[in-house]
Image (cartoon, rainbow, N blue to C red):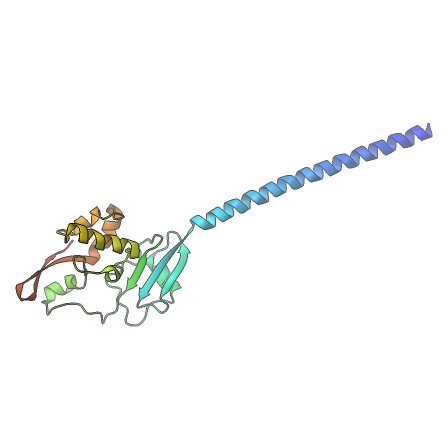
Length: 203
């Protein structure tokens, strides 16, 4: 009888141990799955939530910065160490929401306003970029236009001739209604006339 009791007790202990080990492994398996899933979500989130932009001109530290998606021009200026003393923010929309690959150019108050000695009424428009003349580098001074888009604008002009209206920019690949609205204030169209006079087509 005593021997049977010992055998029964031993069997119970063994079964209990096996059950405990199985439950422990099962719990660890769920923990591993949870950690792995969280890691995948976190990695995906990091990839989606950052963009790269280029800021140049009158900021303390020009360069390319990786920032959070949805950041504004004002945010990038702060990351770049803020503006220099001679920066001109008159025509900069600090609340403009940036997208990946864009270039921001902060002009100086000493930048040349006019090609010719224009009247005061025309000075404001003369400080804009002439899309019928500007090269790739000059076009990148427009907030929202990076190197790729600047190249497409120049190529469109070569293939189709000079722009007749500013709104014709919408025909360039990559410039939709939203992009057009964000850049139209920074561009101008000029036709050269005799005696170095210009006609302006301003949005």
